[in-house]
Image (cartoon, rainbow, N blue to C red):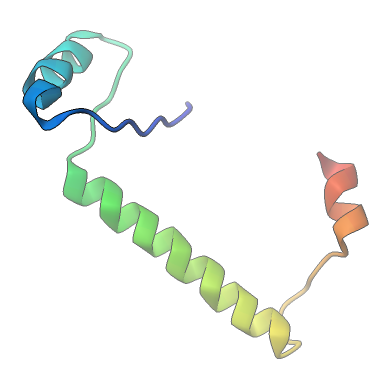
Length: 69
């Protein structure tokens, strides 16, 4: 499943939310849930960066990372 984030004019928000919810293939998360998930991922990334800078986490060089793509 892919995730999409959209910004909508406040006046059209209710309409867009009703439209999206009407599709059986779309899952709409509450805004608070999405923000919490995003903040959790950012915090995890920051923690991993701190561990890597202290040499306590495995890292890859840029070339190896790009080769995986």
